[in-house]
Length: 400
Ligand code: C2E
Ligand code: MG
Ligand code: MG
Image 1 (spheres, protein in one colour):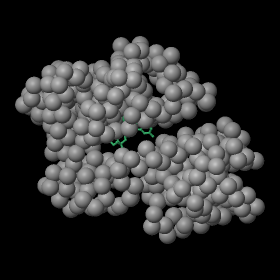
Image 2 (spheres, protein in one colour; image 1 turned 120 degrees about the horizontal axis):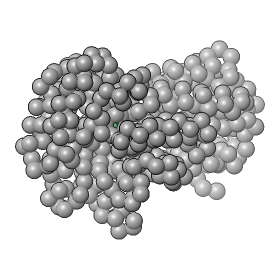
Image 3 (cartoon, helix red, strand yellow; image 1 turned 90 degrees about the vertical axis):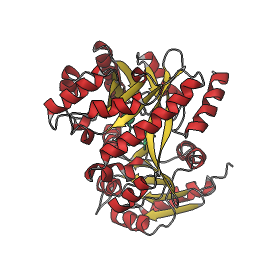
Image 4 (spheres, protein in one colour; image 1 turned 135 degrees about the vertical axis):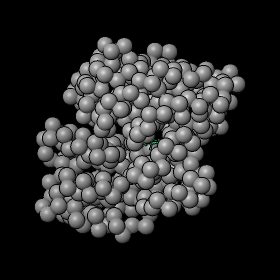
């Protein structure tokens, strides 16, 4: 049997027999450490006592005391970053709704498990864990609470760097561009993900310097790639908090003009959820950014509030459909309907439609079939450093 060494699983269920039975199956499958808890509160306690991360949570929904939904809310607040499987005897539609809720809260739900549990279903879940790839990125799993002084120090010490994740053309499968994703290269914790620092940066009026820094570094990398003959574009994330000054288009233009990169090769991604704070000001700034020649993308489309209004007024060139509508779309008819409608909507507005968060070949084929233009997700590649990307692209082109 395939040994699942070093996998740490926490199992939550109010039924003692179920805890014993599933623990036994997990051990049969080679899982080294199984922790159990009889309700949400006990589960939170177990998590709080762990020094090493728990890789997988298998969580029952119906539990007396703190139920599964409340438990998920708490661990989302605590930024739990491991994988989650929802486990229940509730009907499949309700389980799907709970899965979506967890994904909306930023949790990494990799599937659902219906009772009664079989060893085959558990084995399939363990296969999905894909832990070696996760660990291979050297990505820190430590959820550390940082404060603004840590961040200011990191900015001064130039510890923020950029990882790149490819986007491919849905029709030719050629790599067309990369999304530039910020990473904090921490001397102690390795590469730290943006969830741990972007909001602190935004709340402390540091986001403008930060975005300019990431944009400059990304442009510098693209400049090198263009010199090497690679035909690529870059996408850089911009916060709504950035849109607080009317000279923003000039600031970004200057960051690009100090290089040989044509401005048309730079796309700025804005998360649509927060558009509308000061609608006229946002519209003014975004329109002038377009006028300068930048591409403009609505990020995480479908999870915000002003989708239709945004599409009607804002001069976007691209629509990026959130991963929650791509995840499992082949299996879940409701997700598929939303995905299909978003793609049609984007195409009807003449936008370049990207689907992000594609993790499986089936989802990749489905979104291509539904007519999206570009695809991004772990199925193609995880975000990686610049040199690693150059190497990855060489191999990808050989094998394509
Ligand atoms: P985003 O712009 O929507 O970026 C996509 C996120 O999804 C990235 O997370 C990426 O690693 C992750 N991802 C890509 N493919 C898959 C997949 O197949 N499955 C799953 N589960 N996830 C996938 P990351 O790098 O942790 O970034 C999170 C968010 O942080 C970004 O979401 C973006 O909103 C923000 N962010 C990142 N860099 C910057 C930055 O330089 N400035 C600002 N303002 N925000 C940034
Ligand atoms: Mg983005
Ligand atoms: Mg996104």
